[in-house]
Length: 124
Image 1: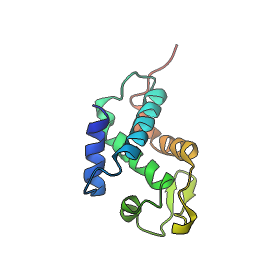
Image 2: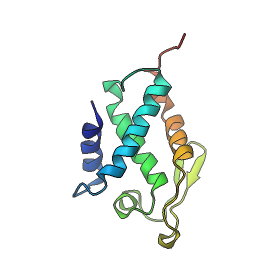
Image 3: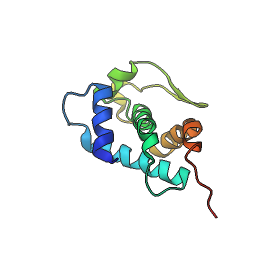
């Protein structure tokens, strides 16, 4: 399982018609994949976490990039997105893109820890 597989599922779930967002989305896919591997103490993302990886990536992008039309259309405009005890609302279009990658990705990982804990390995 690799980045193109995850991208294909994300593209399908978000209903994206072209690959315009692929370079940006692949950075999120790689970041979330690395966070999953780090959290679980494994060298590859387990196949059983494929759809969790997809969902985590979509959540991170929705929080971190709310002004991208293709992404905002899937979350609904003006909605508050809540992950754990962290919530955010899309800013107005004139406000530009937000840059909260680290905190949003950390929140996403913690929100999915129930799914990730099953695959977590102990470090010695």
